[in-house]
Length: 193
Image (cartoon, rainbow, N blue to C red; front, side):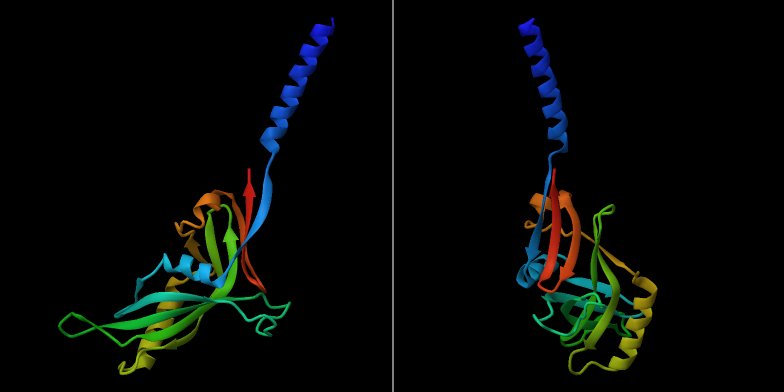
């Protein structure tokens, strides 16, 4: 009888362990420095954005975090992720060629989020905060108007960005549960199952 009881006990223990093993998981947060965020963002560039008649060539992103103690974001206002970019206008000429301007700069921003269902990074309330085309660009105002018109037609709120296939993200990309921005920078919440 003792042998049967111990076999039943062992079987029950194995069943319990198997059930709990399936539920075992742990979570952690992974901070992303501005330098690493810039490196990850760089894997998505350069890009050429088609406008109505012209195009905008965008390259060399730099992720900017608010300085510690900055009053740019209060507790009532969510912090915004800022991305500085090199830009060049590409203007269609009469002979159907493109003429590139000298490099200029732009800055875009938005509140950071994550859609765990679609596995996409969200840029909520995205905006072009600054645009200065390169010196010698003809009619910068007209180009900016065309850019603003196309921005409102093409850019969704939130803007959705597929997770970049960056080597740093690969080990835990399937476990990402949230991406947020706090006063120190980007925080990635990961659940390992």
